[in-house]
Image (cartoon, rainbow, N blue to C red; front, top):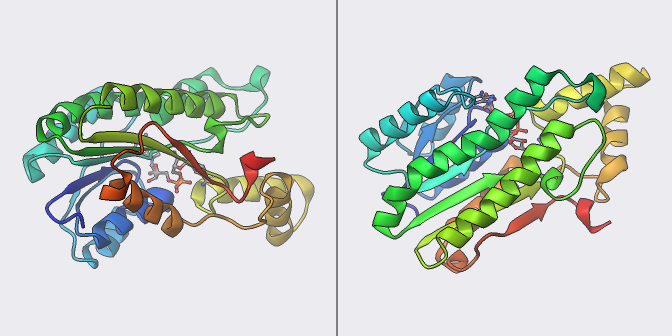
Length: 256
Ligand code: NAD
């Protein structure tokens, strides 16, 4: 379905980004890989699916590096057709203890980077009259949790940005939507499980059960593979008129 299309997925060396990159590669897309994780491992996994892979190590907190990545991707493949804004970090602390530099980093990486990639990708998408922008927000783009001020602010922000981009492209073949996962067991969440296990002096299994039990009625993690298939749906012709949605895949988290 996505042969001759190019998908750029920020933060795709692990977790959800890697799952989405693999799902799009399975549909035939070329992949622009980005992130600080195991680049060779991610490249090998995606190449094994037959995709042409190009890596750019732009730091998503640095607009000049984002500009360089977007330029390099267009040079390599002609155009970015599918943009998945996925790179993200977390920091957990009460607001009065929240380090200001962590606030700035989370807003830059989880929110402002999507503004920069989007503004740079849109002209070519509009010229081709086809494009897909998929923002990986979170249930924290829809509801809050204590101790996550910067993350919740950034994720609510990216849901808002998604709606504006959807309106500005509403009469074109470009769509913009957000995906709002609940808990997904990736390195980002494993750190929170480890912190809970250490704080409560319980096993990894017990900490996982407590983490899910607090918020996610299904008591199951969503997987990067499931999120990848939702991204594939957003890229399909059936989703031509899905615009500005914030689609939760969260085991019932925000239904409560
Ligand atoms: P992860 O830690 O596995 O992946 C994050 C990716 O972003 C990695 O490839 C990392 O190298 C990259 N990255 C981090 N800082 C970067 C920077 N400055 N520049 C470029 N790349 C950078 O985490 P994940 O759980 O897969 O998270 C991916 C996205 O999904 C994030 O936006 C996160 O907020 C969101 N999300 C995760 C969950 C979850 O439960 N894991 C739930 C909802 C939303």
